Amino acid sequence: MLKRSNAIKNGLILFVMLGIYFLILDALGWADNTFLRLGNYIFVVLMINSSLKKATQNGEDYLSKMAVGVVTVAIAMTLGAISLFAYLMILQPDIERYISPVIAANSYSGLSIALFIQSIASSVILVFIMSQMYKNKKSTEVV
Image (cartoon, rainbow, N blue to C red):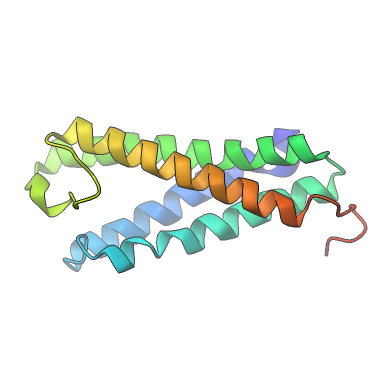
């Protein structure tokens, strides 16, 4: 199921896309801009859509499609949290630059865990919403 739907591949692609996006934001000094942080949802929606579309083409049922979407985002977000922690530990920037009033963290590990939980929660909600679009579609209806 996961191999045929490209969930693992899409999760890795999403991880790379988000990593590059946030590195560019950090290099430009825009890491604290909340509006630009929300731009990552474009990439998440695109990759979830790709995974769900492929799962639908393979004739997967509703729960399998949801599992494919969750695996896609879980891979990306897990690797992202690990990479963020490594990035923060290596460069040791001022943590105040990365925290917002929404994220309560006072250490690099706390920030990484908080962002992981936040990203997984919002991504799983997106998977559920997008799964509704593909709920009753058959493999012949998806182009």
